[in-house]
Length: 125
Image (cartoon, rainbow, N blue to C red; front, side, top):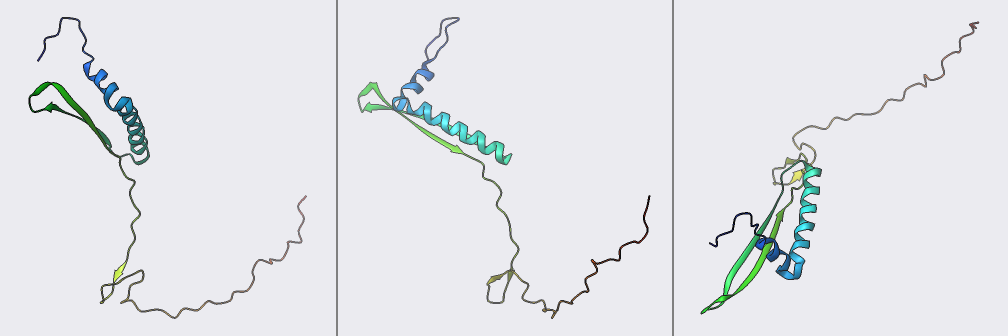
């Protein structure tokens, strides 16, 4: 590991990141960050972005030239999906109504129109 002079700030990682994929990695990371933040705000659940840098020698006897690539992945939280209740039949089919419950033969009754109430003949003054 190289030594750093006092007060010297190393920006090698940032410079490498800016040059990987012709700068597209920075754009992609920014887009994914925005998507994850939006999903976290919408769902109230945790999200993440993973950035991985892979470095390997360019050849068997070449330790001077290196091949560098990166991988970006994100995990955005998903909203909860609505649940439904079903009953299973003896044939293992799912149905919305309980197959073991008897049906009631209900009928509607006509009601008289009670909306015409007699008007009051008293006047308040």
